[in-house]
Amino acid sequence: MGDVRPDPEADEELEGLLGFLRDARGFDFTGYKRSSLGRRIRKRMADVQVDTYTDYRDRLEANADEFNALFNTILINVTSFFRDPDAWTFLQHEVLPELLAQSRADDEIRVWSAGCSSGEEAYSLAIMFAEAIGLDETLERVKIYGTDVDDEALRDARSGLYQAKALAPLAPELRNKYFEPNGVRFGFRPDLRRRVIFGRHDVTRDAPISRLDLLVCRNTMMYFNVEAQTQIVDRFHFALREGGFLFLGKAEMLLNDADRFDVMSMRQRVFRRRPGDASAPYQPSPVKSRSGTSGELHTVARHRQMRDLILDANPSAAVAVDAEGTVILVNSQARVQFGLTPNDVGRPFQDLEVSYRPVELRSLIEQAAHERRTLRVNGVERRVGEDLQYFDILVQPLAGSDGLAAATNVTFTDVTVATRLKSEIKRVREDLETAYEELQSTNEELETTNEELQSSIEELETTNEELQSTNEELQSTNEELETTNEELQSGNEELEAMNEEMRVRTEELDEARTFLEAVLTPIAAGVVVLGQNLKVKSWNRGAVDLWGLRPDEVLDQPFYGLDFGLPTEKLRETIQRCVDSGRRGDPLAVPAVNRLGRTITCQVQCSPFDGHNGGVVLLMEEDRTTDSGPGAGA
Image (cartoon, rainbow, N blue to C red; front, side):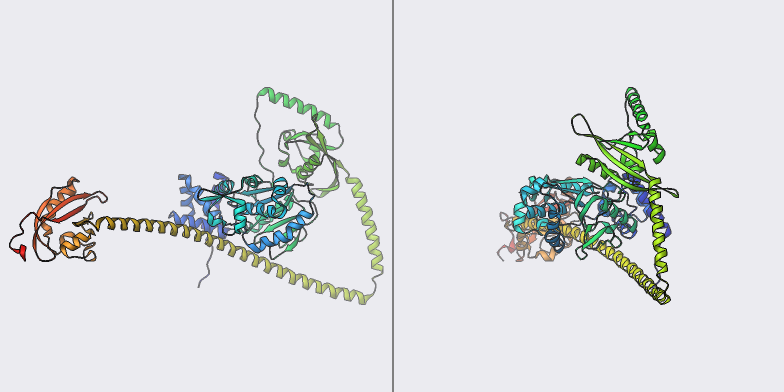
């Protein structure tokens, strides 16, 4: 078998299509794995009989409804209540007790179901907490966020309505306790439903939900490439509190994050956030413009100038942020130190680099406002080109006249000189200690032993790197297999739906056929239905008794080609007149021979068959009022 080589032209067309989806609809799929993403897009292209990515882009531009069909194909919504029961059992028996133990009785418990699809996972979390701590305490303390990029799936999640088949994984007592009948479906109980908040969220682009005790993201990261997965894990690390738990899918692992996450159960894919500062969680979003009258703009500019003049007298850099996260003050020192301009006043603070570098300030501002106390971070390092700067940062909440938090003032005190002096003293001390240790290490035999040990360590490191590389390759293969499995499951569900629809239609057809036979069988007269091509479509019991031919001998046979006691050619003109006029014809007396060989006069009535354009219904009955001739007594 020859090597399968990638098609550079097709790859370029795929990237162009992804760029078009991002610009036209705001869906950025560039972080998804190209193998699974290309496979899902080609599946949709095959459904609409399009061969190239370029032609499919033309179809998207011409048909806006095709976007929804494509997104539903790409975003595989395979989920269920308590999916992978063993993992949920571990979560309930091992993780939940520790989570509750490290929170006070009046603390809010915050949970995020990222990639929640149609909501089964988020509602499973609500049921788990209600069973663990009781319904009343869950309604008081627990808040669950369910997010996804699929708007259609989120509409289903918000409704909280599910078919009986979807509730099959639940024990009967849980189903009866947490779901109520609603027509042909079942609705999640309303009081607990209000503790679950659904919203659209892209884990690769949008700001993460913060201060979480538990983050559940199962079989979502496996669709993304390594770079996107790294960014997502950074956001999840920022979102979790220290000691918070991360629950992933069975095809997902944290291979290179031992410094930030402890493994609680690798088999069940449960990890715990280690203590330490959170990294920058997301890139700045575009600046939003503000509009207003010329008088309002003049007033704002005047107030801004006055505030800047006051703050410029402060020798330390200072930035003030209001309760909505908007920058309201920037002094001259802040502009010099961090490259800010007067135009940055009025922008969202999260859009500025200083909000997350040299230290993540958004969480500190939120904490200071929430706890109503000043926070201090000392010795924060900031790199400017080849130089290092050090700052002591003071985050001070400012209360309004009503006692509520109105703004937060962030002050940066440059302690670079003092820090460098301390660092130099530390370095000199370390140099002296090193020199002393070197004087004590003059034994050549010990040096030889040290070199041998070093060589062994390098060999172990090389082996470890090879094992890590192999592990990452196995992880990638596992993710691809899990993706393919979910695609197959999605296809099976579609086939089940089609089979169910075919079964219903077959039952309806059988019922209609049975009804028609029940109507035609008791009729003593012969009833023959001819289709548009004048072939026999129905031949009732009366026709069998009259002419002696069974239905299986005549069905789908040309009527004029049948050989029985009725001269069908004599009916051709009458049948054609009925077809052309679309009206019932007058009875026609035709000499014929019945199945017993007796000569009779047959009265034939021809009527149009409305169900088939051009078809007719023939009603045949022996005329017993007419003498049948010499053969009558035979």
